[in-house]
Length: 115
Length: 111
Image (cartoon, rainbow over all chains, first blue to last red; front, side, top):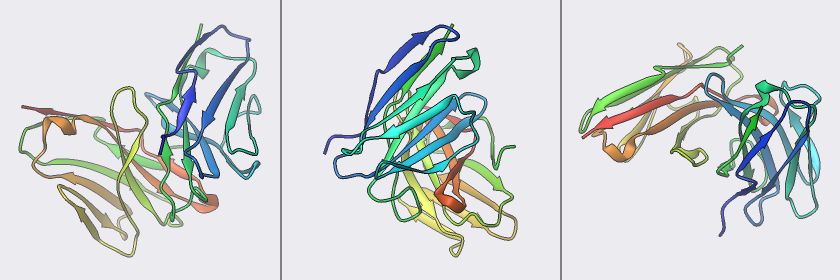
């Protein structure tokens, strides 16, 4: 099976712009989670989608949003970019849920740089 | 506030030595504790995981030790190899199926 794919792999934006990142989960996986990874904070949970519904949300401002499509592909959007949004954004998929019974499989991430 | 505290931030070990990474948590509702391994340019990959009803779990050269009363858990890598050089993250699963990650430990194994 193909792994989790994320596009684009690298992105450079300027402050105030918006950005959309895409994630294609492993075939058959219905849960997609998004994380922000920074050197000082490690991985911070953004949100989780399951069957096109957001089930969980982390402690991020409303500028961060996401959605999931009927084929389980997911997108996340960040509006009004700030310098502090520069990070590696990771997507992870699970067969059923992001809970203890399922392993999360991570994609390689999208490296976002905000200038 | 960091829900899971991980130490050390970086670790250098000689080949064949034991690498030990520690994590501590406060929330007693956490009930699943995985460790992830991440190589440069890759996403984290599940290495080994443990539930709080078990004090130790071993898979090959990797062992998790879990101390429920102290709310601490650690990863031990026996016979460390240069190929083990990576960043390691501990994590804990809380209510609402949300994972909380440590800040990571960069391990370098010297040949």
